[in-house]
Image 1 (cartoon, each protein chain N blue to C red):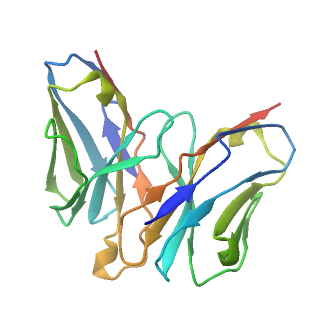
Image 2: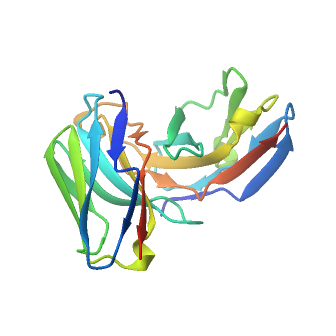
Length: 117
Length: 114
């Protein structure tokens, strides 16, 4: 496996379900991100993890709960979602620019298309 | 505040035409980075280019070229002799120096017809 992978690629869930999205990066990066992409809106940054510590949480509702057990894996746990949470959820990784590296371009996974009924 | 504007929501061209995608940004930072990403129908964003603010040289990579104009806060992207495989949504993005926070535009959907 190379790059950034995400599973599942598609997910349909009811409002009372609990599910998790998984992201794995094989690039040796130190930072990982969750983005939400809704129709006709800019990508919204949800969470940032740097060296496995959460460094950013952009006022995301508590029904979204991230977990970063190590620098290669990132999860997004979902519970009691709303229909407006239906979107494409993208994971990305990068070298941690705050460590002095200038290689701060982010590499994205293919996303999980989430539909909440 | 930082902001990226991609005024063109959708562009349609016929194969072999040249097409330019516009990007205008706002930032108070004196040092920053600009990016272009491509999102094909498969969903993942593919990194195309990163340009730092103190390098205004235009860049060419095959059929792709980028025109960075600090005076007009623009970072436009031109595809020469477009191909059907160029059909995708293209995003322009901005980040400050020493930060990993990317500010994205709303994207431009490019459709190239045979």
